[in-house]
Length: 316
Ligand SMILES: [Ca+2]
Ligand SMILES: [Ca+2]
Image (tube, rainbow, N blue to C red; front, top):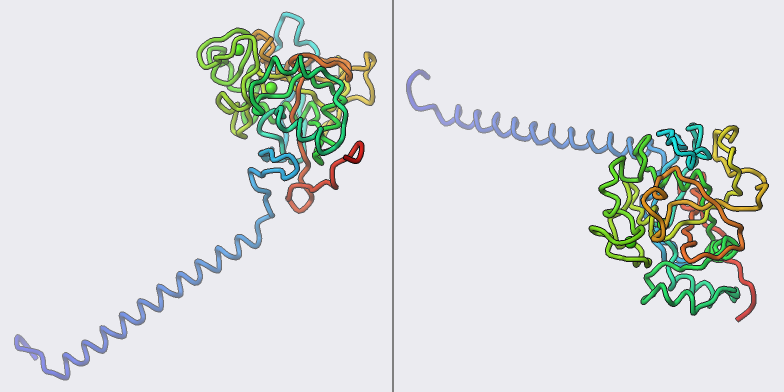
């Protein structure tokens, strides 16, 4: 028909065609969604299992952050000229497997739990410890390497290697002097070190763990400052000259019989907050700023590696 009202049969045909087109459109959309979903499902199936970024460890209730596998540049990239960093030369590439690290230092409350549940006898003087905490959330002080290792065995963990500690502290920053970058003016945002300034409100004393900003992209607190931290490794000054590329665990022994400490403490000036700075003490040495945090491995399926029940020193 030309220029007139369409006939009923024509209208019916148009409606049928319109209905068929709408149905076809819906079918097409559903098909596209299904295809999209199947691609997504396929992608998930094909992806390697990845461990969660954060876990809470049941034994001691500590939050732990995933430090992913990969390589990093270890050592003093600044070639500091004053001689105190020579033991951090040369910078060398180290590759590590993934691991989890406690996000904070071990607290007084967690150390007490360890003593109560394991029967381990702490040789330190609680009257000395008591000067440095007013709640269970403060870091435990006066802890020797032997005692830190005992805690780790009870918790089903271990102390970090020196390489693990430095990789975790550096996070994604390459070649920087500090865990937050190169600029010293931000030290008090991240570290409780000597005196008080800016956000560091603690003068000549420890701070409750996690009081300042996390150090880096892994969400770890107080990696530098507050309390310095024991590592598993024996110490040798020249270890970096010929250390393994993959998962270095330190020399077999130390000529001085000492173990590595990292990170500086509330006692130290900003110099000792340098991320590559290495120092050491005998394993039975128990100083006011010697403390620790622990790590666990990630198993071949990408899950936190569950370690058998913690060591008990005597039946309670
Ligand atoms: Ca301070
Ligand atoms: Ca620390």
